[in-house]
Structures are given as structure tokens and as C-alpha cells.
Length: 171
Image (cartoon, rainbow, N blue to C red; front, side, top):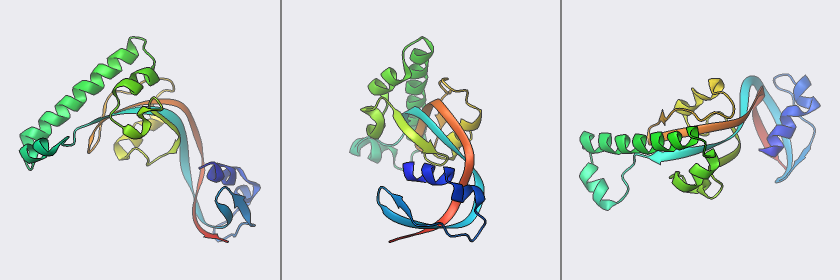
């Protein structure tokens, strides 16, 4: 991701036209040549999240809930209740990261207190993407329903810039 940010800010991108080839660029994983297919608007974010799952949790839950709309609704209701309780704690003054470290069900970010680091549109899914452009910085979102549960998002930064559709060849 850092290589991508450097590339976006490079003089090459500022002057590039569709079809242009970059000079050889060195990145953390080797050398790259980039061909610009086109430019499209993109947004980069910095922030954290909490995830509350509505997926079946164990073998018994999977068997009981297989195809049962009532079980699915109950799991989504339980996930929403957890998300609302976590949001209430943040709105009452607890730090978003402190709460995330205790209650998020995302094992990949729990140890980092929900910190996502820099991320782009698309990482958290279309339902979250729809909320991010208008979410005020340093504000806890309302619970966002996704295909698999509920998310709470807390943005620390937002940067809009041109994004590349490109083909890379590595040497």
C-alpha cells in the first residue's frame, strides 16, 4: 500500500495518459513497470472498526440455522445489539480503540484495537463504502448492516486522489 501511495504522488502519475509506461520503479517487493489503463477517482482512509458477526458460530448453530430464516434473523439481532452496546460506550466517552480491543469479533484487528491502518474503498464492503464519504472524522458510525453482521467505523483520516487502473509487470 505504501508503494501505491508513492506511485500515486509521483510526477509520472501527475502527467500520465492512458497507455503510458512508467520508468522502472523500486518497491518493497522488487522492481515494477506500471502501465496506466486510466485514471479514476479514489479515496484512501485511515481508521478503525469493530465487527459483530451474524454468521453461525459453531456446529450446533450451523445445523439449527441451516436455511432457517428465524435463526438468521436472531443472529443479526444479536449482532446489532452488540454493535449498539459498543457504540453507546464510545458515545459515553470510552475510546473507540479501547472498546474495539474488548468486543470486536474481527480477530485480525482485535489485537490492534480495531485499527485498520490505511485502507481503500472496497476493503470493508459496499455497505460500509456507502457510509465512509459522509462520515465525519473522529466520529463513531451508527451500526452498518453487512452480509455477515454489523460494523462500527471510526475514521481518523480521508484523502481523495486519483487512483490508477493499471497493469504491472515485475522484473
